[in-house]
Length: 219
Image (tube, rainbow, N blue to C red):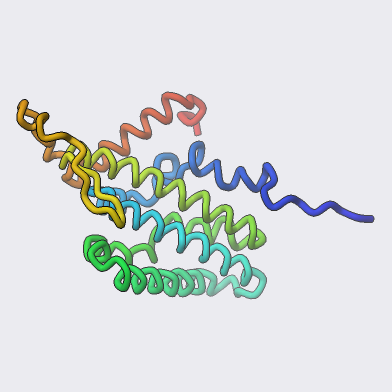
């Protein structure tokens, strides 16, 4: 009796990537990772770097825990998860210090706090411990991308309206609002670069998402 092998990018597997981008977004639906949304979204560059860093840690932590899932004693599983995540965060931190030192200084302690990111620990506990490596990798990509998408959107609007610029990795600061707008009386909204405005922008995103998906209101 032969059984067909499931395609790597079957509809079921692709759903692991697409669902966290919308219906089960870790920030707007599950309300996880809000602290970093407050801390690193005043400019676009650190938000992009943080998004990539969290995705890297989520993907490889999911992979490692999935590979070890049948050998990890239940009593110490949280400790093992923390050790794996901490090792990956150290790698990320060292790479940033070596190749993107200025961004590393902007992110400061928040790179280290990836270790306690609820999204990462939640996916390890809820998914990687009970699933094979490939689906776990896709789950890590999906949740990392869902987290990063919200961070980048929030940072885009905060920097644009707060500073009139957009700062991109490898490019630097680009002035988006032209000089003639300032000459006509346009003034940057300083409130946008204050941490509470991150919550306001996230709240607007949640409102838009739920108004377009009425079924999320009951979930």
